Image 1 (cartoon, rainbow, N blue to C red):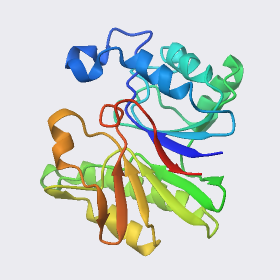
Image 2 (tube, one colour):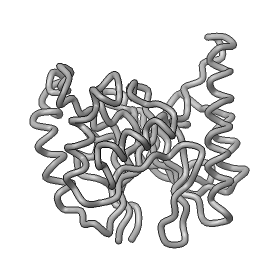
Image 3 (tube, helix red, strand yellow):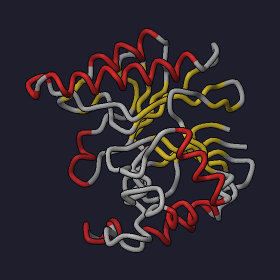
Image 4 (cartoon, rainbow, N blue to C red):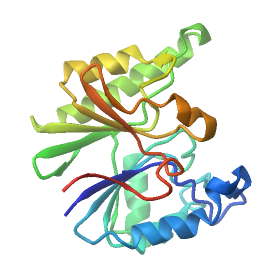
Length: 228
């Protein structure tokens, strides 16, 4: 009954966007993902930290969801910057129900519980002040979604999962970092960083929060165990 996390699977079973074009690190990545997920049991929970499918719609992502559905563990999905299929909670849940996908759940303005901990989070955001007000509006919306998720924790320990890193070498997203501090978050897991950008990751404790990168290529496509 363990909790695992991995992000950035970038599945493309119905689209011509295989990540294998990005070199040796991504060779046979779908098969490697399948081999890793096959080791998880129905009692386990897997957090998918964004960029799960390249599909442009729920329909175009169906093959990717069906690939994930074959593995019995519970899967909790949050939004990444390339999850163009993402829709309202109602539409996504209706689609999953219609297709018989019973192991897929959405993390969006809510929380799930694992033992004494709460699984919380959202996409997050890269905020560049010089890029103007529109990004600030999107950032504020994401901060609101993360806080709504934290509220749903009902006083449990918060395990925070984001797609974008709120902190890495040369970058700090102060509104999200402030939120983590205000809510006493001690552990934060994030994806998004690939290839050379991985060198800028923050691993370990910074500002009282223990950060971990869980992008799939960084983990060699083996989900990171968070806790039992």
